[in-house]
Length: 150
Image (cartoon, rainbow, N blue to C red; front, side):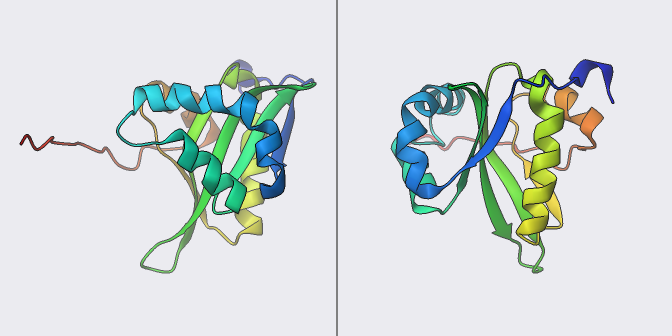
């Protein structure tokens, strides 16, 4: 086990059923908003909630007692080749180095349950690479964007 990523036993990692999303959303919305603040042209808060509540995406939460300290939104994508990939388009919260290793174990099982052969995350910041490389992630792509001005 990586010395930087020792899990703390008082965390609970849970998948939120679609019919329960609205119950936890008041604590989740501010965490998602932090991601939106970094990518304001990409994500809409109400759409994220709606997709979780419809079951189009899976909301997973990390909590300590009744307080949600982090969340991850998961989505299964079937590539043109037929390969199924579990993606993490949104990840937000606090104390990630303390729970990330245990969360990855949960993610691996969810990926297997959905018959996925890989897990992919989308990082808005380079700091994610430092956090996830010790867990076996490797940088796959770099996305560049050019804005078309009117």
